[in-house]
Amino acid sequence: RILENAISTHIDSVRPSIVVSYAAYGVSGFHDHLVTHAVVKRAFCEMQESRIWLRRLAFFTLANIDKASGLHALQTSKPEEIQVQLHVNESHMQKFHRSLDCYETYAEVIQGSNVRELVSNTVSYELFQERHEHILTSIDAELP
Image 1 (spheres, rainbow, N blue to C red):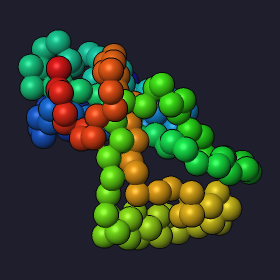
Image 2: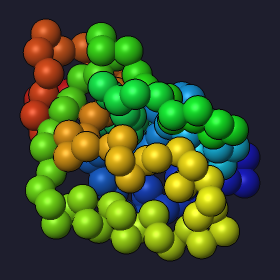
Image 3: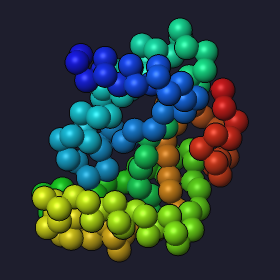
Image 4: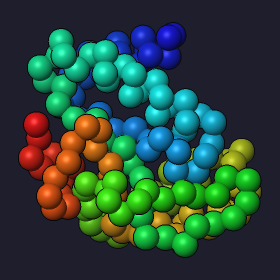
């Protein structure tokens, strides 16, 4: 509940229309990713009715990759769960790789997962309690 309160306070201070977290399986299965999914989802659910500006919860996920093996194997969503796919440019991919470099204590795990090679320039999201007949190409498309 302490984490949920901190997240709720931050959401209130920023007032986003869209909140993004990890998919239920945490992409990599890391415990902090799993907890993040749970607390962000719970905070969103508790806040959604009283904050009219809060309109979407999206879950970052992977799609169409060969799953890596090891302690923290990357996981993917089922194709029917993916509601948004957007394409990012090379500059964004470079930022993604630089952000991975920040995790110095997990460098061996990151290298062993082959995440740099497996993640493409197509970013996928599941949408919480939303279904669209087609794949959206922007995370803010067709906001409820």
